[in-house]
Length: 119
Picture 1 (cartoon, rainbow, N blue to C red):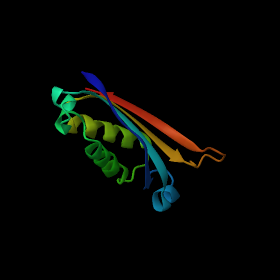
Picture 2: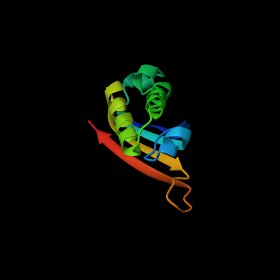
Picture 3: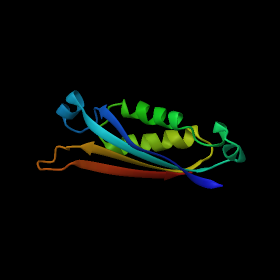
């Protein structure tokens, strides 16, 4: 049976951005990740190995968010690639990364990038 494992509203203080001040002082980011997967029969017998462990998925996102980058596209691609590699049952990953108060010269609550990868 197929389904999704989703983590929403993960918050990080990270150092992503093109401008030097973004990479030195950092900013608040939100990450949402959705993984289309195949649930094995063991998941329906209440066994963790039949699904994607939330804690392991969070660890992938956290590790990638800790690596400073100029572009959120690169971060999202890396998270998606790592996720597909780490979980053999994962079929498709969608990662949304949002930067709060982006430096665009006007009022903007957040700017977002969405990256989608599949096997």
